[in-house]
Image (cartoon, rainbow, N blue to C red; front, side, top):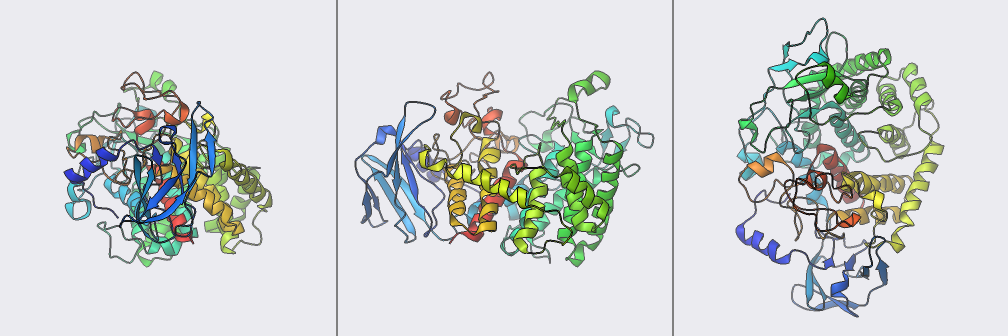
Length: 576
């Protein structure tokens, strides 16, 4: 992966190259895959050139089409230089405007590795050491060995005020709290893809404290969060606390400077089911490793107990506003509230069946199975359950009694075809970003990288390279071929995100943010605009600002990084 620090000269070079009207994938293009750039109106030309590092012109051509924006009167040019296949560093020229272009094998490998290594940088309760983190080393903080049971979470065996231990895990996002719903989704997505791309992840080298043991680094890193999740289950009844949090968000200080008490807050059905699904899946993934045999046994027992609690309490929603009317202190941190729970029951029952083989879970999975494919999100995890079944189709190891997934596969293909068909008329040659609704909170993840993952599933099922090309285009968007011109992954690109809404990066005194994190992306809602400088534009695809106060467009989060890690790794394992 890239170095964890940036020199002043590098920072100066980045500043000089910012806001280029020549929009490219700033991370790199694969030699044998499509290579497209988009030219903003101010750089419009009849002819464009690509020169190698020695200044020799290796390609000269015209735009292959004009692309009218669906949001403004801008008409951009689309340039295709795919016939250039020799690895190297090039310069794409549009009149007086120039932009670096890199072509190399395994173009996304560094992003894939960095996006997983970013989870190590988010660890709680242990020192982040210079040996593994470079300049981003920091002392241990938030040991969470004295966590208070909030009145909303009280039970006869654990009354309000009881002190428990719940150490470890990852900080969830730009804040310092830990949330079961999002942790379950994050680990679930990463483990589902491990089952598809095991060889790739097994070869990934992260340089983390566990490196060198008998377990792949990828699984070691996920295990750090799984061990924390186990502590969030009430051992007396099997219920799972919704989150571990301070009453309000901490200021922009380093973790060791935080002083607020921390609480486990209310058990919820969503938390219990996401926990059950994740633990059942993890028990299956880690079972082949002798060192993890006890964990796998503990995990499946915990999963079954959490599922039983959810069946007994099928509609306990987390409603923070109502909770605060009844209990003190009030909790005003992230809610991760979810009123619809059929998708959680489906995913949990699916994973429990695939791990235990018990018919009861199969019947419950079949009863809750969705009729169509949807890109999974923390609020709708049905896509994770679908992925679990599709993984069996891909591997050819589907049990004879498994429910038929033909309708879901047809639905997945219909979805993927619809987004592929949008590319020829899109502004940036991407399947995402063609309607205003694509630019929601976390648009880079759910509406872009998540779409790319769906396309990779269709590619794996069909072996039709059309879907691989479209999936790569979603990364082209994330890596700079977009209306803002930013490469949205910290530490990468020539126009970099430098000021994410992340307390660790904002408070550490280092100019460059921690690398490998995916910024949320353009958000038409601009819900933070009263707290930030004016947004540069009200257009949906330009509603982004690289400012630390912009939590609506520039925050980071573990679930968003999971999308990026899975997509970049899967493409890198598959690119021709």
